[in-house]
Image (cartoon, rainbow, N blue to C red; front, side):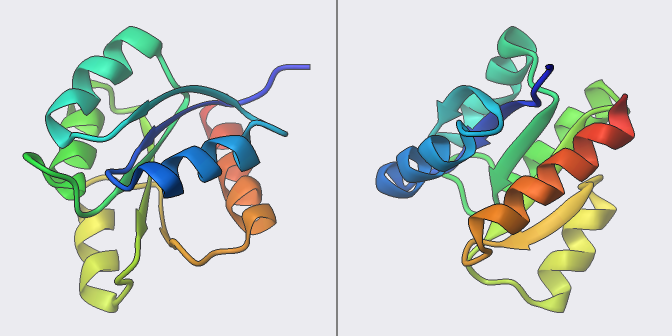
Length: 123
């Protein structure tokens, strides 16, 4: 059975590593990137179906990355993750092309369900 290919972009190594382990039960985690300036190239090289992108990344913000990825490929699926979820962040992320916005404190099964929902919409 095919599984969603996921790229994680988060600058907190412990969080990114734990997230990668959790997602690996039901997703193929194709890469973890900690610097915003590296995400676009990593996405082009690794071909994820879904990119999980933190809002606050060094050098290039997660919202700018979302805009870039969806501009390069309108079918790109980006889920913005953030520790500071408020209405402004949600509105800005969706305006930048995000498929969804999730708080970092989301339960693992809810995040996996959202990845699968976004992935299914791309098939």
